Image 1 (cartoon, rainbow, N blue to C red):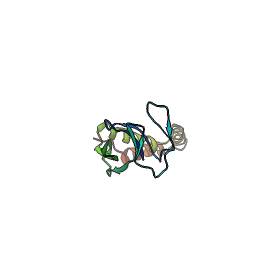
Image 2 (cartoon, rainbow, N blue to C red):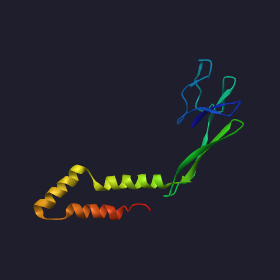
Image 3 (cartoon, one colour):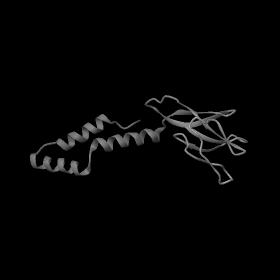
Image 4 (tube, rainbow, N blue to C red):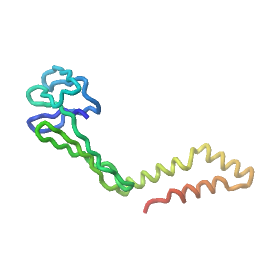
Length: 139
């Protein structure tokens, strides 16, 4: 990941997932076309372009991505992608999403209900009970 850093305060100006094909020099309107292996590279008087080392902390089932921590030592940049525990809102949203997918479309549920009425069966009720059992509401 390429990252453009302001030298004086270490702030991030821009980032690119792949090597940046061109970089605007802030405040000048000029553009630099860096070679892929030209890192770190001075960009104007107060900026440099670096390839950041990205470290992803592993996430468990009860965790999600937390804030990124950008560290700059000289012209070496590292980005640590932290993890944090999911809160109640995250767990509810995840549960709702799983249930929506498992229930299927309204049309298919109405079709089940229609055929249950015609055939005196309980396919739809059984389906709903299974979804509720497979995806219990988080406590």
